[in-house]
Amino acid sequence: KNQVEQSPQSLIILEGKNCTLQCNYTVSPFSNLRWYKQDTGRGPVSLTIMTFSENTKSNGRYTATLDADTKQSSLHITASQLSDSASYICVVSGTTSGTYKYIFGTGTRLKVLA
Amino acid sequence: DTEVTQTPKHLVMGMTNKKSLKCEQHMGHRAMYWYKQKAKKPPELMFVYSYEKLSINESVPSRFSPECPNSSLLNLHLHALQPEDSALYLCASSQDRNTGELFFGEGSRLTVL
Image (cartoon, rainbow over all chains, first blue to last red; front, side, top):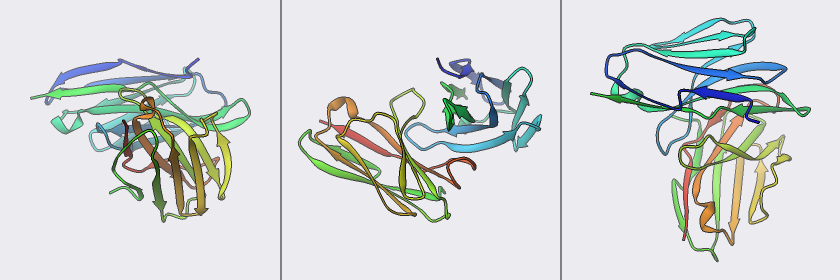
Protein backbone atom coordinates (compact mmCIF):
# COMPACT_ATOMS: atom_id res chain seq x y z
CA LYS A 1 0.00 0.00 0.00
CA ASN A 2 1.48 3.31 -1.06
CA GLN A 3 1.93 5.44 2.04
CA VAL A 4 2.18 8.71 0.13
CA GLU A 5 -0.65 9.66 -2.20
CA GLN A 6 -0.67 12.72 -4.42
CA SER A 7 -3.48 14.45 -6.25
CA PRO A 8 -4.32 15.32 -8.86
CA GLN A 9 -2.44 12.83 -11.01
CA SER A 10 -2.11 15.45 -13.74
CA LEU A 11 -3.07 19.07 -14.15
CA ILE A 12 -3.19 21.54 -17.03
CA ILE A 13 -3.34 25.27 -16.34
CA LEU A 14 -2.82 28.49 -18.26
CA GLU A 15 0.29 30.56 -17.79
CA GLY A 16 -0.10 33.10 -15.02
CA LYS A 17 -2.66 31.08 -13.08
CA ASN A 18 -2.16 29.62 -9.62
CA CYS A 19 -2.49 25.96 -8.69
CA THR A 20 -2.31 23.73 -5.63
CA LEU A 21 -1.01 20.19 -5.48
CA GLN A 22 -1.90 17.83 -2.64
CA CYS A 23 0.04 15.16 -0.76
CA ASN A 24 -1.50 12.85 1.86
CA TYR A 25 0.65 10.43 3.80
CA THR A 26 0.29 7.71 6.39
CA VAL A 27 3.99 7.32 7.20
CA SER A 28 4.49 7.08 10.94
CA PRO A 29 6.64 8.01 12.69
CA PHE A 30 7.16 10.98 10.44
CA SER A 31 10.49 12.74 10.11
CA ASN A 32 10.11 15.29 7.34
CA LEU A 33 8.45 15.97 4.00
CA ARG A 34 10.01 17.27 0.83
CA TRP A 35 8.64 18.52 -2.44
CA TYR A 36 10.72 17.88 -5.54
CA LYS A 37 10.35 19.19 -9.08
CA GLN A 38 11.38 16.83 -11.86
CA ASP A 39 11.68 17.94 -15.46
CA THR A 40 11.16 15.18 -18.02
CA GLY A 41 14.21 12.94 -18.30
CA ARG A 42 16.13 14.76 -15.55
CA GLY A 43 16.79 14.20 -11.87
CA PRO A 44 14.45 15.59 -9.17
CA VAL A 45 15.39 18.94 -7.65
CA SER A 46 14.36 19.87 -4.12
CA LEU A 47 11.89 22.76 -3.70
CA THR A 48 11.19 22.67 0.03
CA ILE A 49 11.73 20.50 3.08
CA MET A 50 9.39 20.62 6.05
CA THR A 51 9.74 19.16 9.50
CA PHE A 52 7.04 18.23 11.98
CA SER A 53 6.93 21.66 13.59
CA GLU A 54 6.71 23.71 10.39
CA ASN A 55 3.38 24.78 8.90
CA THR A 56 4.41 26.87 5.92
CA LYS A 57 7.56 27.36 3.92
CA SER A 58 8.10 29.43 0.78
CA ASN A 59 10.65 29.25 -2.00
CA GLY A 60 9.97 32.00 -4.50
CA ARG A 61 6.64 31.30 -6.20
CA TYR A 62 6.37 27.94 -4.42
CA THR A 63 4.70 27.72 -1.00
CA ALA A 64 4.40 24.44 0.85
CA THR A 65 2.11 23.80 3.81
CA LEU A 66 2.08 20.94 6.25
CA ASP A 67 -0.64 19.79 8.64
CA ALA A 68 0.98 17.06 10.72
CA ASP A 69 -2.31 16.32 12.50
CA THR A 70 -4.20 15.42 9.33
CA LYS A 71 -1.02 14.21 7.60
CA GLN A 72 -1.53 16.45 4.61
CA SER A 73 0.74 18.77 2.67
CA SER A 74 0.13 21.07 -0.23
CA LEU A 75 2.33 22.85 -2.74
CA HIS A 76 0.94 26.11 -4.06
CA ILE A 77 2.41 27.59 -7.22
CA THR A 78 1.73 31.27 -7.81
CA ALA A 79 1.68 33.00 -11.19
CA SER A 80 2.66 29.87 -13.07
CA GLN A 81 5.24 29.98 -15.86
CA LEU A 82 5.83 27.68 -18.81
CA SER A 83 8.97 26.43 -17.06
CA ASP A 84 6.84 25.11 -14.20
CA SER A 85 5.73 22.28 -16.51
CA ALA A 86 7.17 19.22 -14.76
CA SER A 87 6.34 16.42 -12.35
CA TYR A 88 6.10 17.35 -8.70
CA ILE A 89 6.93 14.61 -6.24
CA CYS A 90 6.19 14.54 -2.52
CA VAL A 91 8.73 12.52 -0.52
CA VAL A 92 8.12 11.63 3.12
CA SER A 93 10.90 10.42 5.38
CA GLY A 94 10.04 8.04 8.14
CA THR A 95 10.45 4.59 9.53
CA THR A 96 8.70 1.75 7.79
CA SER A 97 9.16 -1.85 8.90
CA GLY A 98 11.87 -0.68 11.27
CA THR A 99 13.99 0.94 8.55
CA TYR A 100 14.36 4.65 7.86
CA LYS A 101 13.27 5.31 4.28
CA TYR A 102 12.40 8.02 1.82
CA ILE A 103 8.90 7.18 0.58
CA PHE A 104 7.93 8.66 -2.76
CA GLY A 105 4.50 9.80 -3.78
CA THR A 106 3.01 8.99 -7.14
CA GLY A 107 3.66 12.51 -8.43
CA THR A 108 1.56 15.18 -10.10
CA ARG A 109 2.31 16.02 -13.74
CA LEU A 110 1.76 19.72 -14.31
CA LYS A 111 1.52 21.28 -17.75
CA VAL A 112 1.41 25.06 -18.11
CA LEU A 113 0.06 26.32 -21.42
CA ALA A 114 0.72 29.70 -23.02
CA ASP B 1 23.72 22.62 -11.19
CA THR B 2 23.42 19.32 -9.37
CA GLU B 3 26.27 18.36 -7.07
CA VAL B 4 25.76 14.70 -7.88
CA THR B 5 27.31 13.84 -11.23
CA GLN B 6 26.21 10.84 -13.25
CA THR B 7 27.82 9.40 -16.37
CA PRO B 8 26.96 8.57 -19.03
CA LYS B 9 23.82 10.64 -19.61
CA HIS B 10 22.63 8.18 -22.23
CA LEU B 11 23.54 4.51 -22.77
CA VAL B 12 22.32 2.05 -25.36
CA MET B 13 23.34 -1.56 -24.90
CA GLY B 14 22.52 -4.99 -26.16
CA MET B 15 21.37 -7.80 -23.93
CA THR B 16 24.80 -9.46 -23.99
CA ASN B 17 26.81 -6.33 -23.23
CA LYS B 18 28.53 -5.38 -19.98
CA LYS B 19 28.44 -1.72 -19.09
CA SER B 20 28.62 0.49 -16.00
CA LEU B 21 26.88 3.59 -14.73
CA LYS B 22 28.92 5.95 -12.58
CA CYS B 23 27.98 8.44 -9.89
CA GLU B 24 30.15 10.90 -8.01
CA GLN B 25 29.50 13.38 -5.21
CA HIS B 26 31.87 15.65 -3.30
CA MET B 27 29.55 16.90 -0.58
CA GLY B 28 30.97 14.57 2.05
CA HIS B 29 27.74 12.58 2.11
CA ARG B 30 28.01 9.11 3.59
CA ALA B 31 24.88 7.58 2.08
CA MET B 32 24.43 6.95 -1.63
CA TYR B 33 21.50 5.47 -3.51
CA TRP B 34 20.52 3.98 -6.85
CA TYR B 35 16.95 4.45 -8.06
CA LYS B 36 15.23 3.17 -11.19
CA GLN B 37 12.52 5.29 -12.75
CA LYS B 38 10.15 4.26 -15.53
CA ALA B 39 8.17 6.82 -17.51
CA LYS B 40 5.44 8.61 -15.55
CA LYS B 41 6.28 6.68 -12.38
CA PRO B 42 8.07 7.75 -9.20
CA PRO B 43 11.65 6.56 -8.61
CA GLU B 44 11.97 3.06 -7.14
CA LEU B 45 14.77 2.33 -4.70
CA MET B 46 17.29 -0.29 -5.80
CA PHE B 47 20.31 -0.06 -3.48
CA VAL B 48 21.52 2.00 -0.54
CA TYR B 49 25.14 2.31 0.55
CA SER B 50 25.95 3.68 3.97
CA TYR B 51 29.56 4.42 4.87
CA GLU B 52 30.61 2.46 1.78
CA LYS B 53 28.76 -0.68 2.85
CA LEU B 54 25.67 -2.06 1.16
CA SER B 55 22.81 -1.27 3.49
CA ILE B 56 19.73 -2.07 1.44
CA ASN B 57 19.16 -4.23 -1.62
CA GLU B 58 15.51 -4.06 -2.64
CA SER B 59 15.52 -7.57 -4.15
CA VAL B 60 17.18 -6.32 -7.30
CA PRO B 61 18.08 -8.99 -9.93
CA SER B 62 21.75 -9.99 -9.92
CA ARG B 63 22.21 -8.61 -13.44
CA PHE B 64 22.52 -5.27 -11.59
CA SER B 65 25.65 -5.17 -9.43
CA PRO B 66 26.41 -2.11 -7.31
CA GLU B 67 29.85 -1.08 -6.15
CA CYS B 68 31.03 1.68 -3.83
CA PRO B 69 34.81 2.08 -4.30
CA ASN B 70 34.99 5.01 -1.86
CA SER B 71 32.77 7.50 -0.09
CA SER B 72 32.48 9.72 -3.19
CA LEU B 73 31.86 7.13 -5.87
CA LEU B 74 29.04 4.74 -6.64
CA ASN B 75 28.91 2.44 -9.64
CA LEU B 76 26.19 0.24 -11.07
CA HIS B 77 27.50 -2.63 -13.20
CA LEU B 78 25.12 -3.96 -15.82
CA HIS B 79 25.26 -7.38 -17.43
CA ALA B 80 22.79 -9.45 -19.45
CA LEU B 81 20.04 -6.89 -19.11
CA GLN B 82 16.56 -7.25 -20.53
CA PRO B 83 14.63 -4.69 -22.63
CA GLU B 84 12.31 -4.08 -19.66
CA ASP B 85 15.34 -2.76 -17.75
CA SER B 86 15.28 0.30 -19.99
CA ALA B 87 14.67 3.27 -17.70
CA LEU B 88 16.15 6.38 -16.15
CA TYR B 89 18.65 5.40 -13.45
CA LEU B 90 19.05 8.01 -10.77
CA CYS B 91 21.86 8.29 -8.27
CA ALA B 92 21.28 10.22 -5.04
CA SER B 93 23.20 11.03 -1.89
CA SER B 94 22.36 12.24 1.60
CA GLN B 95 24.36 13.26 4.63
CA ASP B 96 23.77 9.86 6.16
CA ARG B 97 21.20 7.06 6.07
CA ASN B 98 18.87 8.50 8.66
CA THR B 99 18.93 12.18 8.00
CA GLY B 100 19.45 14.84 5.42
CA GLU B 101 17.99 15.83 2.12
CA LEU B 102 18.28 13.58 -0.90
CA PHE B 103 20.35 15.17 -3.64
CA PHE B 104 19.79 13.62 -7.05
CA GLY B 105 21.97 13.44 -10.11
CA GLU B 106 20.64 14.17 -13.58
CA GLY B 107 20.20 10.49 -14.29
CA SER B 108 21.46 8.03 -16.88
CA ARG B 109 18.94 7.12 -19.57
CA LEU B 110 19.45 3.41 -20.34
CA THR B 111 18.04 1.69 -23.40
CA VAL B 112 18.43 -2.09 -23.72
CA LEU B 113 17.95 -3.46 -27.22
